Image (cartoon, rainbow, N blue to C red; front, side, top):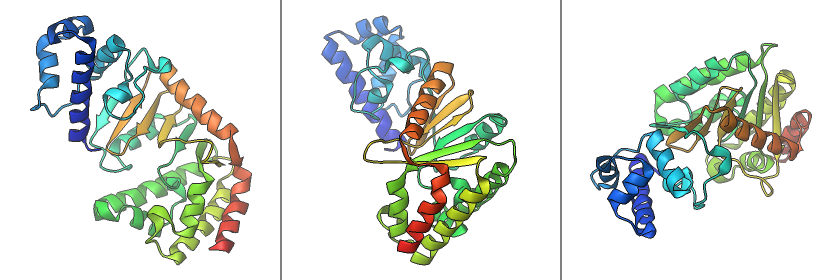
Length: 281
């Protein structure tokens, strides 16, 4: 969904919530600690802005509904207890997974463990051909920036003090090797070159970079990054949800730990798995 769709769905669900409570807008605003003018603006069809994080949190606490449901990002209405306490910052306008904010967050996390679930393949392992393929629709500037960023992260991962973990499903790598799903138009030679680079770098970078592969039939994870103890960012295609409260960051860290515990392929298995896929491609 784009920003306008998120705003429209939020407005619809907020109106639905007020009606289900059987109270007037004024009564709801008072119960949620909102100005009536603020509530009227949020419910106005002319409104094109998302509420401030404090306002969103007040509504979620008052209604005991999840922030994700209010924003149309989940069909589950219940408020997740682990995230009660401080609302995430909503950082819209993320045209691509590459963003200046990511650079800043990575810089802030130097010296800490960085753990992330990539949207496709780990950036630092990607070949130029794969980067060109993934970012073709974003224009040359974004593609060049992504290439530079991948090279910078690869150089950073070669430093002995770095500690980076990544986790994704082994099925996603298998689909890549077969040229299925989003990879349908990527030539076989480009896929083979990428698998060769994965095998080479997974061996070279271990143990400062460790990639785990879980079973996608048993687990699921949207793209997110945990930047040490300082923050975590969940990427949702057009925006980031940025968590900075200690408990929120810990929740995502614990989920990352669970994905690692359930991994079918450990970092030392990646080279063999990549070569197996290469032989089948």
